[in-house]
Image 1 (cartoon, rainbow, N blue to C red):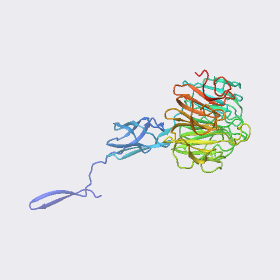
Image 2 (image 1 turned 60 degrees about the vertical axis):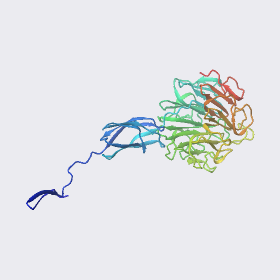
Image 3 (image 1 turned 90 degrees about the vertical axis):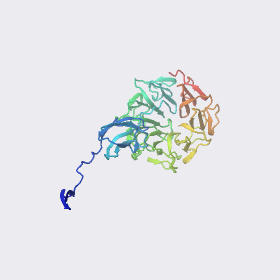
Length: 479
């Protein structure tokens, strides 16, 4: 623009001075900058109190993290804003954007990360053993111990709970097949028991009757153990875990796929292919599944359609479960393809997966259901699911337990050994806060007591006997 010019206008004896070609000489308002967020991460569920620092926070109209408005937003000063994160749908780094009516907007790229907290898993059931955590994080296990899966330093079976060796404190426990694993509050994973298939993840194939650290130094938020002791289909024991950012890793037997795109077994964690960020992970005998923003993905063996993608073709990488349903929980169970011992007469394998939708409806797929999700009959609404070897159980919103499927050893808990295609109530009137299932079923009551029912050939019910029970029996001496 040309510089200002002064013009004199004379007429009628009057003179006036005007300007031409002038621009407002006032400076533009300063732009907003966003420099940091503290803390820089928080759980996917939201609720993190954060402080955003920067400059020129005036006339603020919006503060978003991952596109969602910050709750309880307070502009403390021109350099500080406080508020609370709300729930997000995706894990990982998110942009933080501050906008105003006078100073534009500023962005801090990837300055806040939604992470998974270390998820509490207080109870786990394997083929022939069970483990549980006390409220102080001490792990106890009971049942078969031929390969050291009880973690006691010996290979002697136990009909009642025994403390796992060492001074480790766990927030989560996962067991299946011939091994057990635990997760500390810092996210360190330890495993113990059989290791022929590299399922302990410590870089070797040597069994260990005490916890050994999983190799690689990764920090995890959740664990899942899969496998089937004595499977006639070959190796199957494996373990999977999630990092706080939702990245999935698996290790152990890779007969049908750890999800890394290969069929090569690994004694160390390998990344699951595809880059999907999961919020939950589960493991069946030869397959695994994860949740990502409500969508279910599965990988591995698919003999019975347990991957849920409409086919029976195995997949060494995650494939989306068909049907377009949105899930908030998954559970995987069953037994791999087999014949004769150890399968009950007439059983040829039962691998299946179940999911719980946001409206509490249960769906299952795989053996007995088909290659895509189908609704569990009975119309019950559930808050949690537990898929076992030949059966599945669920908890209602009133904390009542129901089970359905095969009932060879009383694992349905309704006082009989008659199988049922529809959910039947577990007897005893107990209110449970968590359930786990395999050949047997166990639950933690809302008062912290432990009860188990079903197969007890190796003392996995923990009541001091080897007598199976079709009704819940108390775990002896539970701390």
